[in-house]
Image (cartoon, rainbow, N blue to C red; front, side, top):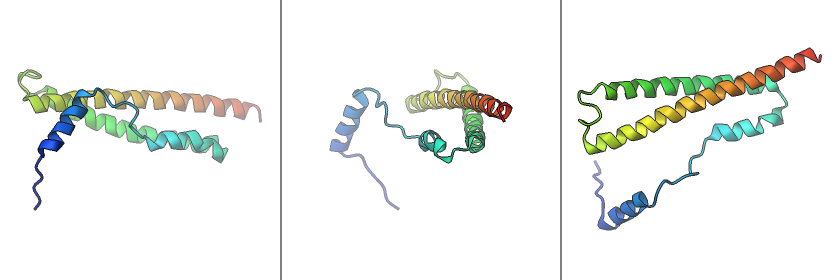
Length: 125
């Protein structure tokens, strides 16, 4: 078993990083890149299938995060009763719930757009 310990230098770096403000633009979502290049397939049905699968994944994640969120909110005295670390973990969880739900809503909007395009293409045949 290995036990890791924070060094003085590591702690200084951590504190500097935490005080430097939000690190934006560092997230990478491979599915966004895949969606950008879906046009290379020239197959709108494949795009729809991709979005359906993405939606299922996002719905599953959203449901899981919401269940954890709800369990934490049921802690007696929430949020004031949470220890400092647990409170900050909850803040991150809350952002995760909201952003995943927003991605799910965006995916639904994309699916509607694809469906309209497919219907338009079918009417021109």
